[in-house]
Amino acid sequence: MARWAMAATGLIVLVGIGAIPAVDGEDSMQGATAIAYVNSDAILQQTPGFAEADSTFRAEFQVFEQEVLALRQTLDSAAAAFEQQRVILSPAAAEDKMNELQAMSQNAQVREQQLQARAQERQRELMAPLQDRIQTVLDGVRAERNLALIFDVANPQNAIVSADPTLDLTQLIITRVQGTGGQ
Image (cartoon, rainbow, N blue to C red; front, side):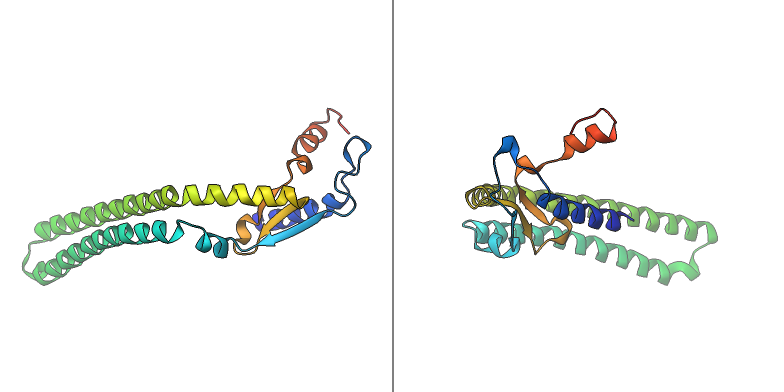
C-alpha cells in the first residue's frame, strides 16, 4: 500500500508540475518544466575526500566486525560445550546452562545491534560533509539550469535529490484538504 501511495504521489508530482501556473503573471519556468537526473553513487565516489572517508570507515568497520565475530565464536563454543556436557548434567543444571546460553545470546544480539548502530552513525559522520557539499552543488546546478527536479537513479527510495522550492504545493494542498480555501 505504501509503495502504491508513493508511486501515485510521484505521478501526481510529475503530472502536476506541468500544470503549475506562472508566479505573478511571469513565466517563471519559461515553458515546459525541466527535469534531470544524476547517479549519486558515481558522484559520491568522485567527490574529493571520499576515498579517505571510505577508507577510515572500512578500517573502523573491520574492528566492529571482529568484535561481532568474537561474540559469535564465544557463543558457538559455549553452545558446543553445553551439547557435550548435556548428557551428564542433571535436569536442573542443564536448565541453568540453557538459561546462561540464552542470556549470552541475548547479550550478544544487543551488542551486535549496538555495534551496527555505531557503524551507521560513524558512516553518517564521515559522509555528512561530502553529502552536504554534493547537495549544495546539486541545488546550485538545479537553479543555474532552471530545473524543477533532479532525480537520483542510484536511489529509487529517495528519488528526488533537489527540487525547486517554488514548486512546493504542500501548504496549498493542506489548505484545500482542511477546507479553508486557498487557490
